[in-house]
Length: 186
Image (cartoon, rainbow, N blue to C red; front, side, top):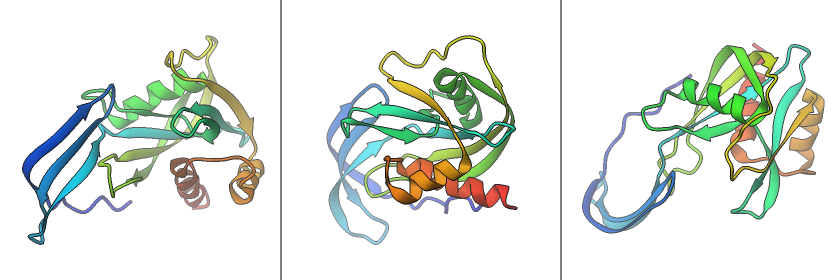
């Protein structure tokens, strides 16, 4: 996988406003861009995230139907989560997979990076394929604010859902699935 190009930092001339929340921060700054232009821009500062596509030995895919308050609906998405402070992406997704799905994986393959919203966020998502799954005895903990239903579907059903639009999938999951198919098909 090709790494991100090296950064070309803009110069922050002045912070105009900041809002800090539980996992992300929002800043409005006056910037001087590498091309010399000065302007005010808002940016969401995000610590990064990891996502896993869990696939059982028989090819069954584990996917979540999760309520997302920002869009006031449930959507399908793969297990994912925000990196904790000083947490490595693989350690993060191993934890999230267990917490959200009740599975752990022995085999992990990187599917590269995704920058989902570079126009207003610095978030980078690390994508992984999780295989050699073991279902854990205990019920998944999840976070107290998560409303998650765990589904097991076939590859054909996932492809049908993506192409038909019958049920909403988030962009990171569709991108990760596309990368997983390329990886699995060699």
